[in-house]
Picture (cartoon, helix red, strand yellow):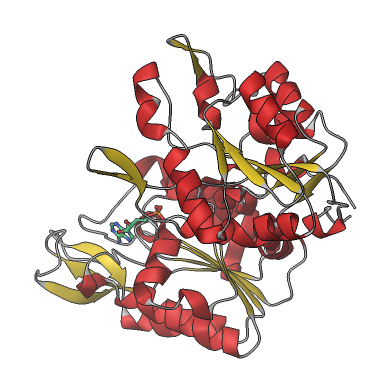
Length: 406
Ligand code: AMP
């Protein structure tokens, strides 16, 4: 069944609780905190504007950074975020410097249709009177019930926290009649959920990055769902070692070799591994390097996939109809070892133009496609790091499970 979205809701005159992801970087200017990058605020505007223009009374909240002591609170206040939001919306935004109590309740009750307020960082609830209690982060049932009591309906647009069961997502949802996805959340469910649940085939997954151990559950899940799974990046050398190749000083996880052998044996030609590497004598950009096919010389380490691997991976991608990509093919932060990742990014642009759905799954991969300048030419760039990984691992995300069915 499909999830309820904000467009399914009757919003007029309703107090609409809205969990947004305003976990933005801040900077200090003349002793005051300011928003250093407002991408996430801009991204949330469509859902907020939709609610306001349909006569909803928006009550916004988000976490911001991590609160481990009372001392962390002043520098992680939502106040600068409220100011930036007001500028972007072009209308006043009431900031309430509290997460509970009469001041917040009065402010909500005074809201008129089309007006908006934002209350303080939800993680202020993690420390009370100097004691670490994690009421938000451990989903204290009383807190979720209290926040739910402040509104009529709940819109969750914070995909980045969907893999956590917090008071401000699952806690509220458990205590309110209707929970709907905002537009950002809806898009993540459509693309990431669609890829793992009902992909148009051929479905090709590309997994890269540093460690097998970080991505093993994704590889296993996608081997079950995809038609091909391409593995590149640092983790490919543990697979190369499992095949009996020499890998020099490349990244290596000895305790994952047996697992890699098992996957190679079970997956057959579904698993596509690099056939060459750009190997360097040091972990730096300007170093002595060569293309190694098979064994890597002693004293050298593989820092990128080589040209034959690029051609092989492109041939696998050529007729793909759905592609999910997580993790770079090499040390893309160094220009000399970014070529493999760039080539894959460019190939994804081509298959997107041919009509394939191409999805980049958060974290470092998002940074890579942005650095390569191809982000806006792909179908979907996930905004969640941990959340998109867990989605691709096939796990149920509590924040999404808590959204009502249509
Ligand atoms: P992840 O967060 O697991 O996606 O890993 C991303 C990191 O893996 C990036 O910082 C890359 O520089 C790094 N990486 C990719 N390939 C290699 C490699 N061959 N050797 C060392 N690090 C790598």
